[in-house]
Length: 125
Image (cartoon, rainbow, N blue to C red):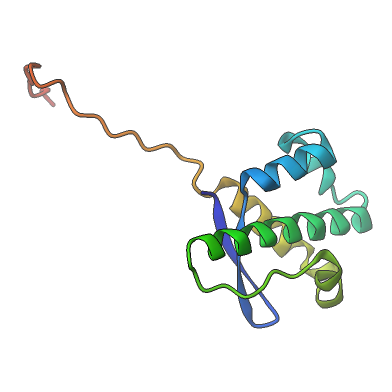
């Protein structure tokens, strides 16, 4: 699961880029590849609104994930509540946390064992 944490008002919240969040992003923007455009700073107020909406969705996803996995996590803040505790100077931090959440867990680890009948040879350096 792709997760990160963000501290707001002295409380650390789990963020989660779950399938629910992907679905909401797709409905709002047309696809996850459109997130960067939605956070384009050429329209700072719109970009802040979109960052707050996305952060609220990820925070809700984090709260759901925490509840299902019995993790300690404060209640998610709504977009309205986030607008009351954040300002435009927080935008860069929000954008970084959004990117971190989306990319965490993105690497794929593959574990493989050679077939039981395979002969192994040592490669020469």
